[in-house]
Amino acid sequence: MIQLSRAFLLVAALCWQASAAAPPPPGNYVLTELFAGTFLPGAGTPSINAFGQVVGLSPSGALLWIPASANGAVGIISNPYPANAAVANAINDQGQVVGGALGRSFLWSPETPNGYWGPAVDLPVTSPGGATGINNFGQVIGSTFLWTPSSPNGMTGTVNPDSRFNGVAAINDFGQVVINPPGSTPLLFTPFQANGATGTFTPISGVAEGLAINNNGTVLGLSDSCFSSTQCQPLLWTPASPNGTRGAVSTIPVPAGFVGLARIPAWFFRY
Image (cartoon, rainbow, N blue to C red; front, side, top):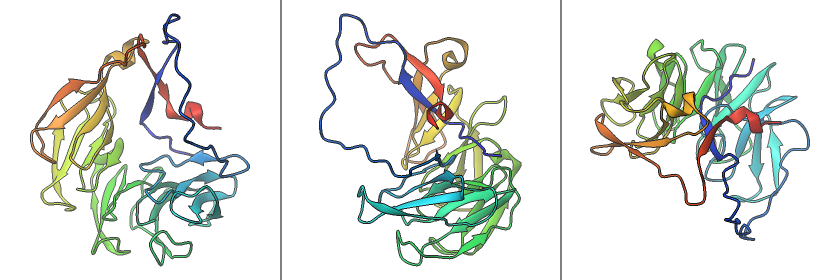
């Protein structure tokens, strides 16, 4: 069973005013088909890294696409974890890949940064959906655990099993984790020190659902209106100090020319 991301895309929904015609998009990009066939992007964060590598799921299992050069449009396909029902959920800038297969959580590391070859290990945890996120230190997050390597991007480490990670949405490079507990206020896990294995869980007040977090600790979220109406209000929760546990919420203004934003599940765009 594929675990879909709890993050949602905020998109314009029937919102351009009839009198305001949209200008044509700039001609400075090219669309390239990476995989000829059925492909689902990774369910975790991030599913693409700074080198341009992409992870996901294909009919043959976990998939890793590697460009021939940084952010190139031509590349090769690899299977980082050849097991039944395996899915690659997330990738960091080193090229390390995490995912799951039938309750197992795996970590694959390239022999060289962003390389093609490398070993995979099963992490000593059992978690529905497997590992769903990884940061650039190599910390791995899942719905029941936080795994921290003994050294940056290492293959051995320690597990912090904690049911409060249930509903995990994202992890940043400091080791902070955004969590959406079922039926409750979003939580922010903050380690006692950068990339620490233990820390505090604090409510993200004023936010109905957390979607993402940057390396400063700023959280992108949604308001209650996204669950009760067709118009959605995106929010930013900004810490009082970098990677702090106390902060304030501000709204993201609806762009000029739009009458509202709609909340559409990310899986809507998967085919």
